[in-house]
Image: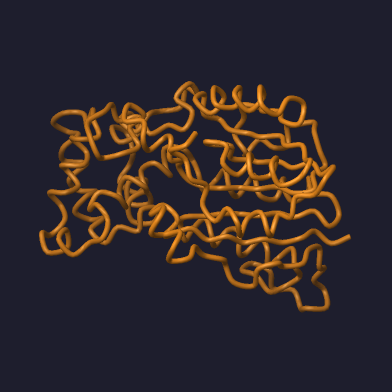
Length: 305
């Protein structure tokens, strides 16, 4: 576990405010960093979810250490409506890919090295791998992944290159995809960038392969309903689209104007109180110690009584 650093850990625990006897739901167990903090801060119980089979292996170690205070279900957080447990005093989401998934080369999430082009958070799901998705995705689907999800400026070149390349030979490996993306990005931009030039396109493809945006849109509202009165919901996002979904739902539940809600103010109901008016972000010190925290944004609310 020592290689895993949960982002915004102090800020998350302060906002989630675990207390003795409290029951908490960690929807994105990953390496268990946040779960451990919740269990160690007070005499709490935690139910953790994760669709990744490797996370289930790590959860066994927690079960040995924490016993009946900890339970794990291998489940996508989009399916929270299928769990019987709850309601909860606090619920936490930490979106995106975990450090373990990035560091495990054969999972295909990273462009550093050469591995099968998989990228599935649950490789046993039966859903298409990144290789299979890239082979069949339509131009609009590729544009959505690389332009919208990846927020990549050179999306046109990359989309055209993928379509041209796959007509000749499938993109089997992370190295092949990374080299193809690099060939589409101007040299000046490569030298000036603080991140690897393939980062954004890889991110966009990963989000598309795992249906991450759709899962967030489904999972967050169900989670809110599973909170006890005064229960707290904390969301850590790493992408503008993830943060926007959380921001708009939080505003809606807090009775504030939100996109798609044109009702006058006196017709809105306040079902929650915002604990963060603006997203909390990592300090310079945390960013220096854990570069993954650079883009992290934390939002929190408490459910009204």
